[in-house]
Length: 232
Image (cartoon, rainbow, N blue to C red; front, side, top):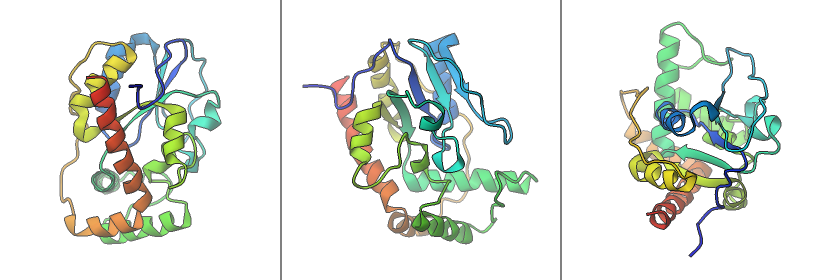
């Protein structure tokens, strides 16, 4: 039986795509332990885009890439051919993202160019309208190497990814990923956690209006289970 995704090539750089509100700060600590000085970070400083850096064999570049905001991974690194990422239940991620952005607004910091509405109902409807127009830059779909559609997302995963971790299965995912990368298994810490209302009454609305997110996540849940079983 072959691996469900392409094998990792240590002779080529690895691109770790940090999707907001998916345990990314905790995941970075794991990658830092594994890669040491070979872990390079890709994050904006204010509105300034990070510079492109030279990547060598066995290095790992970790950070935010968002095609709808002008800094997709292919725009910076068209040679990127092996990626990893961590996903989270789309609705739980959506609520966590809103909590964080709203908390920042309440402290006087307005994220990006758009003011976050303190009313969750208005926020989710605004995001649904943008999703319908194909311009929801808060969606995790923007962080993949290519535009994701219902028709192509399985092929994109096969072409670019060596592993897809799931936050709800973080322990098993990190153990399997360690085997993929030839590293020592470790426990992923919990950091940068938000708490508050979970708005369960809006889940059905989200599943309807963000259907592609849920379809992709369901596919990755199955893929992740196969990866965990393969590398057990």
